Image 1 (cartoon, rainbow, N blue to C red):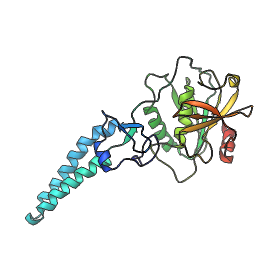
Image 2: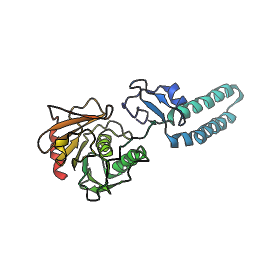
Image 3: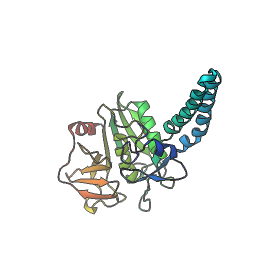
Image 4: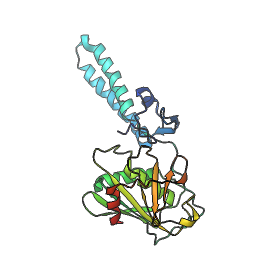
Length: 262
C-alpha cells in the first residue's frame, strides 16, 4: 500500500519507476502529474538491503551443484531487483506550506479533532507520517491524543495549529498514506472557531463556530468541507488552495454523530 502516489492515492508507479525513484531528484506521478521523491529512510536502507540480498543469493549459489550455477547467478539478480522494487516509498516532493504572517498561536485555542476507526497505535503511526510532511518553517505545534474508546480518539493542539495544517490533518486522517484505503469505515470531524488565518474564508464568517470534515461519497480525496453554526457550508481544495460555497453539505450521519465528542 506504500507504493501509492501520496497525492492521488493511485498505484501509478511501475517497477522501472520504483527502481529509479530517488530522494535527491523528483519525478511526476503518471496519473496526477504531481512531484514525488523517494522517502529518505527508504533511500538510506536501500544500499544495506541490496548488499544483504546479494550476499544471500551468493550464499545460496555457492552451495549449488555446478550445473545449477547459472540459476544461482539469476537468483542473485532477481533478489537485487526485488529489493530495488520493494524498498522505495513515494512521498511528496514538497512539504506542506503554511502562511503564518497573519497567524498568532493561541494557547487557549478550541481546535479539536475526533477520529473513529483507527486504534491508538495506528493513529500514532498516522500522526508521525503527517508531521514528517509538515513545513519545517511553519509554526511549531504538538498533537496530543486523548483516547475515548478503543477506536475513538480526541486530538488537541498545543500551543496551536495553523488552520491550513488543521484542514490538512482532517483529510490525512481520512486518507493516510501509511494504511491506504481501509476496509472499515473511518470517521473524522474537526471543530474550531473560524479566525482570520483561515485564508480566503469570507470575512462575515470570522468568529463563528464550525466543523471541518471530508464530504460523504468523496471522490476527490483532496478536499474538506467546513460547516458553520449559521449553516453556511464551504469546500476547501488543497489543489486550488481556495474556499468556495457549496449548496449540499454532504455531511454523513456517522460524522454528524461523531461531532458530539468535540
